[in-house]
Amino acid sequence: MQMQAEKITANWLTKKSYPFALELVALCTLLLALGSFLFLRDVWQAAAWMPASYQGVVVEKEFWRPWTALFAHRDLGHLLSNYLFFAIFGFFLAESFGWLMFPFVALLFGGLINYLVLLTLPPTASLIGASGVVYWLGGAWLALYFLLQRHLKLRLRLLQVTGVGAVLFLPETIMPNVSYLAHFVGFLTGVLWGVAYYFWNRKKFLAAEEVAPILPDEEEETDYWSKEA
Image (tube, rainbow, N blue to C red; front, side, top):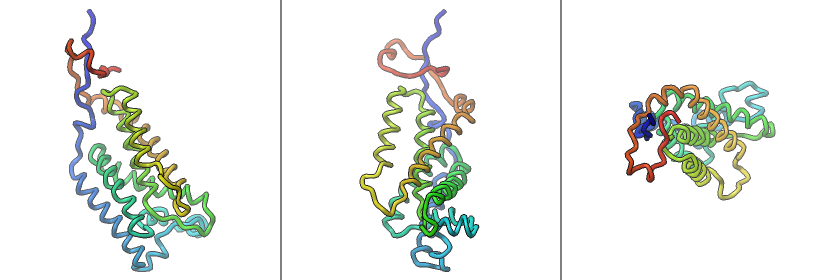
């Protein structure tokens, strides 16, 4: 007997919602703004101890700098360029995957990204800003969205994530004082983390899917996969 085709009607992203995600993101963005204020105003000599450099981190072993550098920005425009996407993608990840994903895993990777980029810079060059972690957040979210939205056609999901990624993350102009390597490393490690996280948790993600039979008059109109696909 032929089994009736099914469509996915709900998944992890539509069902799972962690509490206090908005409050958590509000707190983190406040800390981001506060850190930038301290740096720009040189409160408690923050301009000396917040930036990261090869000399400071690798030579002088000041290992906190890759993380304090995330909260330092050269001016208000630099801060605002990171602020919005930090909040948006941080909220998406915190709401769907919990507080460990954002802010803790995200900020952990942010510091590691800064450290890797420092290894390619001249010893006295300084690195500041949350761009690396912002690109990590975007890469992780797009990878998880692509893998979890299984009710959509593969080519549609590819179009969505490549389109959004290109619009949001490809630079319109090249600026000499911007570390595009931090952007690239951040986005790449975010995508890799998102893929790894999905397969570590694939059973519970699939278990969260709900299915319903595809009615005869829907078969020509829908592109739903069955739950086993």
